[in-house]
Length: 172
Image 1 (cartoon, helix red, strand yellow):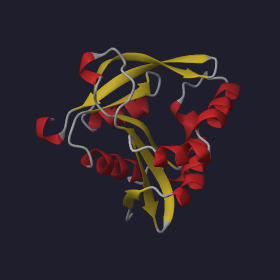
Image 2: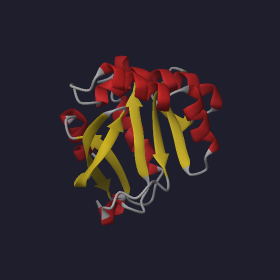
Image 3: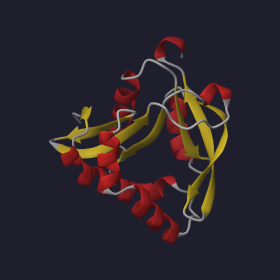
């Protein structure tokens, strides 16, 4: 499947929001209350949130395109909040890397992650639910290692996340 990754445009924000709403629950532990997932989507994954990311020079929002349609997106925060984990602080954070559900298994997620990582020359971190074994394996295959734990607040539900770090390709 031919894919293209490009910087997101404001016109992409409605589709990005749609993908975010469709896929967010897949990244959460299975016991996350549906009401908390819905609240998080309403509070964090609307069109205006992605427009704000486009306005922020400290964030890089990219989209994955297939046959002219946006099918995925990645979001990197260049100066994220410290987590209190020395090797993971002061490095950019991949906060989102999602592919529309009907494209899972297409190679699109791998391509999106690869292109996103190639745009950076420094280490990068991410957080992932400790219950999301599939995502953890995916990130491990791409050179990320577990360097600690943090929490993720999804409404009133508190999740435990792994903090994973990847060195630039020259040092992997």
